[in-house]
Image 1 (cartoon, rainbow, N blue to C red):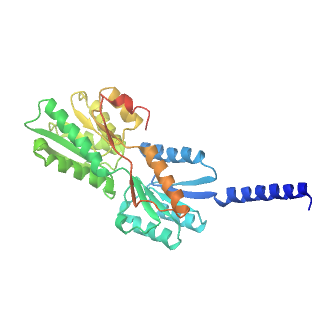
Image 2: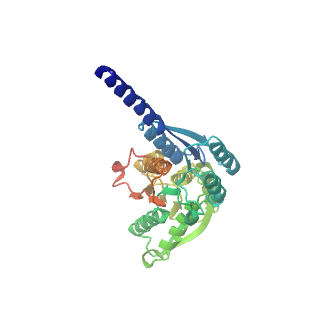
Image 3: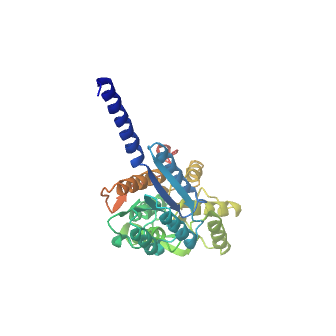
Length: 320
């Protein structure tokens, strides 16, 4: 064979190998979100989508669970049927994740839970993981800061608060509420008393209605601690509608959404906790891609929470 023909053959072989390698690692990831109609989860979802666009040969198939357990389960069944390379799930109900885990495990498809901790976390198989922020930090940071602000306001001998809970079937809501009680059990914050504690399911409109009902009782209160920013904002809206001076009441939330930042800048929301939504999305996709390649991933990957106050607000203003 002539030398120039050998060179042509080598070039053709290298080109073909390159084509094979580029397609061999093409990865399709099915993403099942609990719901699209949620500010924080929208940032998480968009963060994941934007990150995927920077990666070669990675395709996301993103579905909206519409806060319906059965709909989400059906979406995951479709992912399995279409033989995606990995699945990422933000579960509608964290108590219903065993069925999701089994679906993926039976199909030998790697699975990553994101943001909401599955009830079966300790029993996840080797090719499944959980990426989120440690909820034992979220409510703790929030409540400690509310406690400090109450003391600063001269309420250290006795303060009444309302607590707004998220979706009770979700581990995050239960843990955030437990954090409140744990902080109140410490000597420094034992002066705080909960006068009522009810769920508003992480929703702004439900929190507005709940706060309006509390206001009709005429009970005096010093603070509202909400499991997320949407409920905190709903509480503030109800207070404004009732003519309550929101500058004199301490309202706290979690997530540091853009709406929360605007409220804090306006002097209404006093406390929030930055939960890195985009960081969780990126972390979940990284974990899913590693598992799809057969690499090992830590069972739990934590993205740190950070306290946000009017003093450091500028550091977080454009992150969520």
